[in-house]
Amino acid sequence: MIILGFESSCDETGVAVVCTERGLLAHALHSQVAMHASYGGVVPELASRDHVRRIIPLAREVLAQAQLTLSDIGAIAYTAGPGLAGALLVGASVAQAIAWSLELPAIPIHHLEGHLLSPRMAMPCPEFPFVALLVSGGHTQLMRVDDVARYELLGETLDDAAGEAFDKTAKLLGLGYPGGPALAKLAEQGDPRDIVLPRPMLHSQNLDFSFSGLKTAVMTRLKEALNQPVVPDNLHANLAAATQDAIVDVLVAKSISALKQTGLKRLVVAGGVGANRALRERLARQLTRLKAEAFFPPIDLCTDNGAMIAFAAAQRVNRGLADLSAQGHGFNVAPRWDLAEI
Ligand code: KG4
Ligand code: ZN
Image (tube, rainbow, N blue to C red; front, top):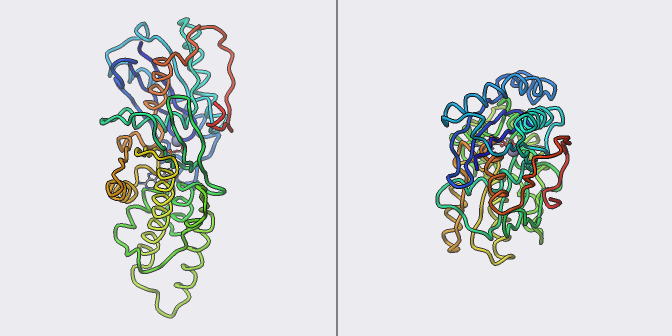
């Protein structure tokens, strides 16, 4: 079966076609980063309006790329939450309208399930069970994943997400939005040992995280340095490197604890922060030492995209976990939605 999938939970419009047997056939993405940049963050109303403009042209583009027409499609998938309500409604209403008009089933997908299963699009494909480190702009969670739809929360952030910590620190350093990739780039020129930042909850006896203190620590160090008679060389790059190092340290240590606690040997990393090179390198290195394996989605599928939504729907279809009755095209979105609840 060929599934047409839509992602519109935040500031990326993503559309893809995935085959339940052959995997990803085509995907296309429009990022709203440039549109939101001058506001320093996502403006929800602008995001919704832009999704409306982009979603149908992207669907046409994806079908053309895959040399398919709507008559080849067997089901429509869409992100039903969590995310921005107005933005989610665009994808949900377009998906349900297409499904209704073609008498096809519509499959609502949890955005984080999309992220979490996305490394299975790459080769080698991680077999179940595995531990998933979900690190996005809104979430930082460690999950035990026994199969599709069998997710157990092991730990999560008590305040800011890892991506948020990257973004907020980047803003303090004048790097604009979105901060993660910009901070990572600046960090390459800095020395992470020049300034030592706290590693929040590194030694807590659980798998929870806390990142909100990090931006305060960076702000304090920045103010102290700027008040000195001579501003230290390379201050911003060193602070960027120290921030990245602190976040990566905590993420790696907790991931290893999760593997030890569950006795599992496979770690899957997903979500936007999964694109971070320092995190990928450190995890790969440390896990090899423990005879465990780290799996990542392809870099371009770490941040939000339609492929992961269509792919999650395909995996649900393959396991008989999707309602394929093609009835009842009324719908709801869930701006707040716990993955462990599905
Ligand atoms: O998964 P995602 O695209 O959207 C959400 O569902 O939140 O993640 C976006 C987050 C942002 O906070 C962004 O700054 C961060 O991922 N990010 C990165 C990198 N690329 C994206 N953080 C660190 N290093 C990167 N290379
Ligand atoms: Zn996401």
